[in-house]
Length: 167
Ligand SMILES: CC(C)(COP(=O)(O)OP(=O)(O)OC[C@H]1O[C@@H](n2cnc3c(N)ncnc32)[C@H](O)[C@@H]1OP(=O)(O)O)[C@@H](O)C(=O)NCCC(=O)NCCS
Image (cartoon, rainbow, N blue to C red):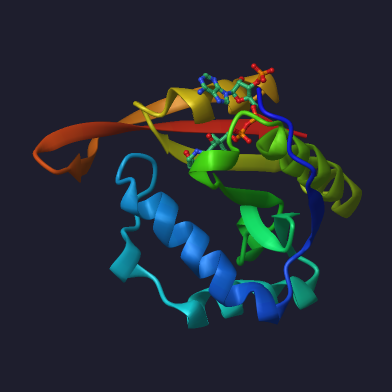
């Protein structure tokens, strides 16, 4: 494990381009995410930042020397019957992984979700993404099912693992 100094804070509109760049870098690894670099826009990131004002979602960034090295999204369900549910997204820059940043973001976001009264956290993860699956299990997420061949990455089919945690 490397030791990086980092700070955690809610994302602001001025961070949108940097978050976009980070997500594109991770997306370009073509291993962990559904979205590839040309499949999202800075405007969509700005939308996520603005959504926080509704108090039903959280976009946290981890910063190291002014560089955004990690981002986490906790997005509250947009309809009444799933208003208690949070959908999760998380990415740490390649050179900054295994330094506890993902865990710190997660810990902070889960505390926020509890305070807000959410009941269920959920996500889908590529079945090949061992590092993310380990992180989620460490935080008490359980496997709920598998969506067979949900992804096609280059010429390979990859299953999606559905995971959740009840608060
Ligand atoms: C998954 C990810 C968010 C973890 O973030 P991180 O900052 O590296 O995680 P941490 O350093 O806090 O480690 C937390 C736990 O994750 C697991 N983990 C992290 N890296 C791992 C690795 N290379 N192999 C196995 N487990 C790993 C371990 O359980 C670890 O706990 P431990 O340190 O007590 O063993 C990061 O690897 C990442 O951004 N990957 C690419 C994007 C991605 O996969 N996002 C999730 C999409 S669903």
